[in-house]
Image (cartoon, rainbow, N blue to C red; front, side, top):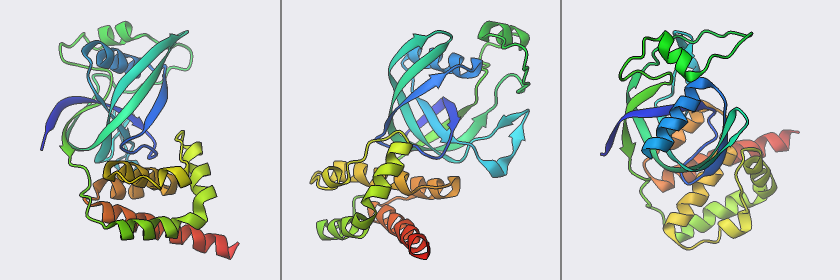
Length: 237
């Protein structure tokens, strides 16, 4: 199991899965420092949800256990913002969280820059404004299903095709159900399953369950359960 130390963490919602591309608008000093570090050192970062049950530490929300390793594919400056194009890779599990060097104190009248905040913190040699973690990379889910089982999976989901495609678009991803479901390559099939996971994922607990799953057949079972729940709600309306 590969380990990555001091992985920068970008805390967002539970809507990102392996194989996804996306765009982030970065304006907070902590995330500007993070992205500068990642770009200059060609380092990955972790896209991870905030754990609501963990509360806050020094004013900062805390990460969930499982996240998605990402890398910067392109970037551009837009005024005081950074527009970052990202690619997601694999799932990781947090081993130990490293807290920022300063508490989160909001100032509605002014927004200090990175240098000012680091000076305020005493310019620690290894300190950062953002949360980091020592993490372990998780192997891709085992592809343990037959092609017949895959076709049955597609058949169960087909009645929800418009909903799945709309949900995917809302999350900033592109799902063409007919095209994406017809792939024969096992890796592309897994990417399609991850897209379905994202389309059906509605909370952090479910996302963590999906990211923790060790087999593709297990992921498909979770998706089928979610799809049946959606169909049931539609039948009640």
